[in-house]
Image (cartoon, one colour):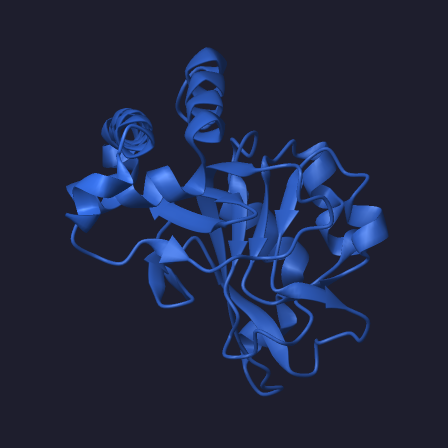
Length: 220
């Protein structure tokens, strides 16, 4: 599975879910100086967090004179995921239009047979009712009703993309839940997961300290 064995992948996913996005963001801040956190996204099923290594599709504003415009989502979907799609997170950039539909239940149904971990779209998606039934997690900017293919188009696969001011490159890990999302370099994933558990422990100790405070000590 995506270059690691399934037990290792499942262990990382469980660790990420146990600490949540906020602790992972804090842990990233202890290891890296660049921006890694994303704002809260919407999901057809917010109870399902998203975790996995990234594959990307870059969207651009639609132009009918570019040869790439004829390539289509299916070509780029399979190009992005490659020969080991299982457990991957498909990240779609906005192309400058985060309030436009970038796909829906029909196109993304390919993710079911490819056994992806999920989709993170920096744009709207259609068919939340359908996406909710799929076995992978989906997070995006919200639900759309209108097709957006005359505004944005999938243009390139397996390239670095920008999502909400954060650089995301293929192979990075992404985690998303109701509080937001975070992008973690692959080389740092185990260190960041371990640090996130330390963040949780530090917070728990701080809460215990706060609960033992006496108001009179602060009012003297």
